[in-house]
Structures are given as structure tokens and as C-alpha cells.
Image (cartoon, rainbow, N blue to C red; front, side):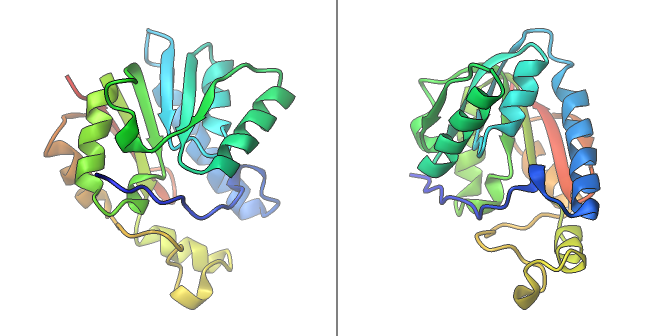
Length: 200
């Protein structure tokens, strides 16, 4: 069974740091350009955190839901979506509890796989839920660590974020996915890597 620990919490969407805010805007722009290509407007996010990406998808006309292992993240997601006047179901679940009950034309998994020891099993579980598209994103090492140091974060660990047990370069992340699914498109917004995969 895959054990998915809760990730470290940092509200990157509402940071006051101008550099971090600009970097985040770049990520969201790339995310939005990939997600809107799906003609069927249904999307599910696994590891939804505070629900910001779910809200972006809802505003783009998607119906969907979000899942996360952390109850405090689910509470915050519900609070934010209610304040935004949106209706999005959120539920506390691990990845390994979802196959068999969740299936979505577009499955989103953002900043989750780097936290999971058995990341290969987790990718298989995501593939079982994606029908047919999976959009996965992880930090881009070593840029992630370099930019953390520039932003004065995680200095004692030389930029390594707490809870990150897996680290990928761009080529390594692509190889990790292509062992299972063909990659339709890959993007590299500063600090992250995104892979849009067609599962079947």
C-alpha cells in the first residue's frame, strides 16, 4: 500500500514575495493553457491542497472534485471555494483509496509524487483513475533548491524542502512517466515540470 504523507504547507498562491509571486504566475499560466485543451469539462485533482487549482478549473467551466490526505487542507479548500462563491466537493482520501471509485477524463496531480516513497505504485494508481489524460507536476531539481535559497527558504538544507523524498531532473521526470504512459506535452515553468500524459 502506498503511504502518502502530507506535504509541507506554504501558501504560494498568496505570497507577498514579488519573485515568488511572479514564478507562481508563470506556473498558473502554463497550467491553464494545458488544462483548457480537454474538450470534456470534467477534472479531478488528487492532492488538491487548499483547492486553488480546482477553483481555476471551475472558473474555466470544469466540473470536478478534489482529494487530499490532510484534513486541514480540505478544510481550507472548502473555506476558500465557499468564499469565492464556487461549489466544489472536497474529500480527505489517500491516493491508494481512490482507484475503483474515481475516474476522470482529466486527472490532475500537482506536487504530490515527490512526497511518496513508493512513487511508482502511486503513478500506477493515478493511471488507473485517468481516463484518458493525466496532468502531473513535480519540482524541477536542482532549480527548485537554487530558487529556494534565492528566496531565503530551507537554507539549512541547502534548498531541499521538508517532506521531499523524490527528486527529478527534467529528463528523469520524462523517463519516469514514459515507462508507463506516452507524454503528449511537457512544460517547464520555472521551478516545476509538468507532463500531460495519455494513459489509454
